[in-house]
Image (cartoon, rainbow, N blue to C red; front, side, top):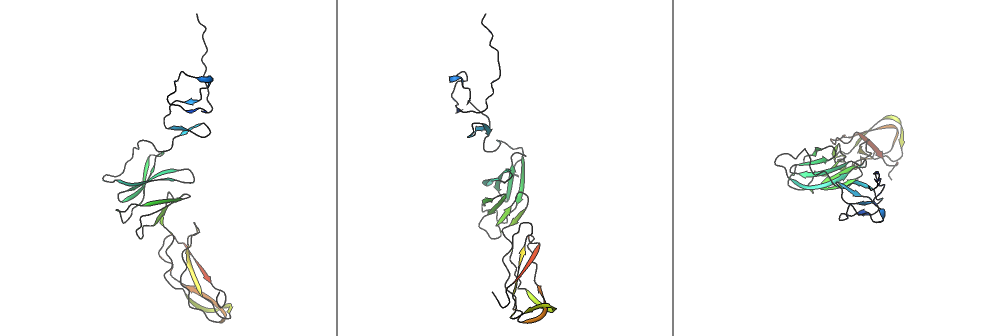
Length: 227
């Protein structure tokens, strides 16, 4: 009776031979089993380990709305490694999270016939389709327009008793600011020069504007007499 060879599991720490699909599973040249014959949704890394293949699941349980068709796809990976498939569908921009099996609508354009182009910067996705007003950005949660609308009003000034003195006078400008992102708008046009004054307080007045991204106004002035 032939001796019984004990069966023990073989642990393969890395696949140094690589992917070898036409290799016989019974062939172990040199006693090295570190060849990957086949794999489902996986690939070999430069470190000879296995990782999930690039791409998305074959199927999602969620779907686009009836009558919608995809005009363009874009892969958006955020800094926290969240991977989203952005779909420019008919009349909406949607983000597919394959891991969560969800579809989120994050923007509804006013011009539905023109496809969008996309550009990621960190965890912010910028997109536009060449139409005025469609320049937008999305951080995975909030969708806002590029930049902020500049002030349209010219600031006005008023003088009351105070401690400030100017030999030649000041001009004032103001900008809108988003304190969360640090973004500021283009500055307003300059106010009229205050002209020389002694012992005054200057009050600057202007319109806050309608851009909801702005939550603060910063006021600037030049040096006394310009510059």
